[in-house]
Length: 388
Image 1: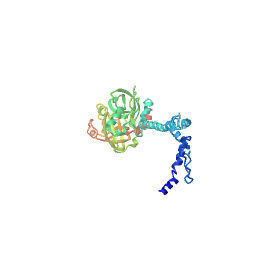
Image 2 (image 1 turned 90 degrees about the vertical axis):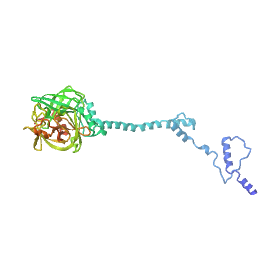
Image 3 (image 1 turned 180 degrees about the vertical axis):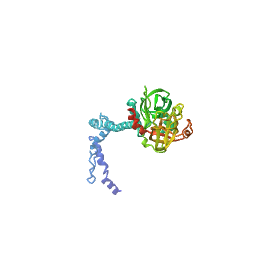
């Protein structure tokens, strides 16, 4: 017991006493204590009494000011920290937000422009230039939405307004064919044999409106003609694609006016490329003349089909298709899966023609002039054409 009491006396509150003294001194230095402070044990030196109070509150105050943006200096640190918080911390968050929004706004603007360029550049240029510019595309266009590529119904709905029926009055009868609108003010590509020798031309659009037309130029060597509607505007121009990219087996759609049935749609594939097709260049080559049986005369493989082509002929490279073509489809559109025009239908083989029947129908051997041939010839056709 004695030994225990002595140890307690030697180490009585060795840690607590100095700290208690420090706390009493810091909180109420003038207060009197009935118990004298314990002597400091040199073996156990206490930490300085004022060390906790010496911690600077500047950093917590600055962080608090930065988070709240309160320039009044409320909270810890009082008025002394308010100027620092207001000047250094206050403007920082707005500046950071503006810098963060800048790149996103720029990216959004670029995305919009890119979408405008990738989706409908050709048609947009046409709208901005008065709808008298040929709409041409060598890449993907917005004629048919990507999710509807190859859908015949969507292709027909999108392109039919750009295909017309062409009726020509000839000296010895009439000729009926088709044509493709290439400018909003009424330039139309068709076959030379549709309008050759015409005294007058009447064009009917898909909505039933009728226009008179004049010939701007013909090129009998390529069996092409360019006509222009009178007093026409706001027409839907077709998009001219890239026939060099066509492959055997590609899906195609044909739109025209066979036997005068405006807006007839058929479909098939590309059967072959670069077929040599020979057609007449004479003015009596109208494909559906009254009282005549010479429907769509052409030569292929050294033989004549659908009538006598005559002495004056021309040969061109053609796309072959099994899409059904009939008399009246001449000059109409051959369209790819994206809705671009890749050819101008120009000839078809009919087995029944050999039996002197003028009512021969398609057996799946049709031919079209590649659209790149047409595009290369447009300047010549606008200048009046070339028959040399």
